[in-house]
Amino acid sequence: MTNGSRSHVASEERGTDSDDVRGVQSAPEVPLDVVPEHAEGDGGEALRTLGSRIRELQQEVERLNSAVHEEQMLRIREQATLQRDKSSFEARTKLALFLDLLAVVDSFDQLVKHGEGSQDDSSLLVGSQAVLGQLNQFLARNGVHKLEGLEGSAYDSATSEIARVVTDSGAPANTVVRVLRDGYKLGEMLLRPAMVDVASEPPATVGSNDDGED
Picture 1 (cartoon, rainbow, N blue to C red):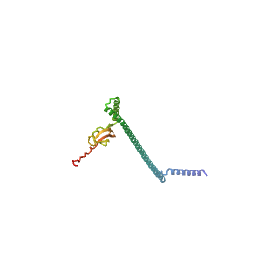
Picture 2: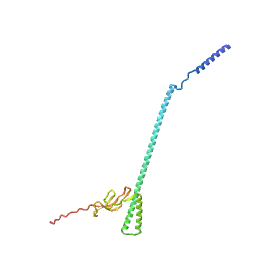
Picture 3: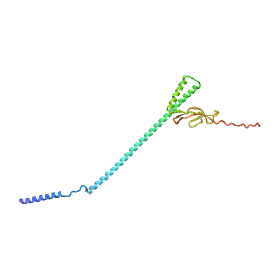
Picture 4: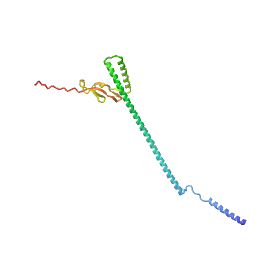
């Protein structure tokens, strides 16, 4: 091949290469907002999956919040029950203590009354009076008070129990004649009823039918 032929062929090749380059450079650009249908479908599925997952997470959060709330309410109820049981136990223990203490007060009270009735001035009477005074002060500080003014008043079953019915007391019927054992209140609650003697109705008088006839 001659030099002229080679030059012509080279020129044609360079022309072809130039045309290819110009064709590539002049190709229209694809807009970025144009998404192929297959890509659009993949994206929609991904969004649906994400939305479903978000809903699942929201439901899980709601379930956990509900579980936490129920646990808190359960603990509150348990604490309230424990506090109520504790208060009830303390109240029962306190009542039992006071009732036992009142039995001791009764013993000292009887001892003091016997000593005072016999005009005994011994140290035993003085000591018993001192102990009885201390016991009554302790009870008063804790809200325990003796029922007063029962003797001579009408019998009240809400505060007293009848030990005996007295028929010859001369007092009106249903009247407290004597207090055998003092009653006490703890605040406004009856701690122990009083034991009392109560007057009964006077016996009916049967009139004589003797008119002097045989």
